[in-house]
Length: 107
Image (cartoon, rainbow, N blue to C red):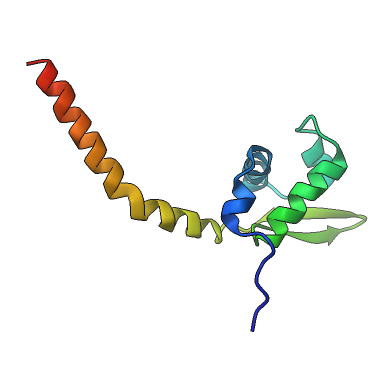
């Protein structure tokens, strides 16, 4: 039986810095040093964020010469998309009701 991740996808993306790291990695593989250059935080802090993203299955690391590079694994984000999709019809209903209310006030 596969070991459960220490962090789930929702926990991992709850932090704005981790969301920004995922956006960076969506464009290209990067090292910790390259990622750290994009933030006003230490390399140690970036490493901790990458560890959480890795635990959630959102990134993986690989050696490239003397450095470790990180790659985005987007598939776990489907969990978030599925969860949001479930609630989409509630938003549509609320927006439709708001539209009717606004249009009624303009009559």
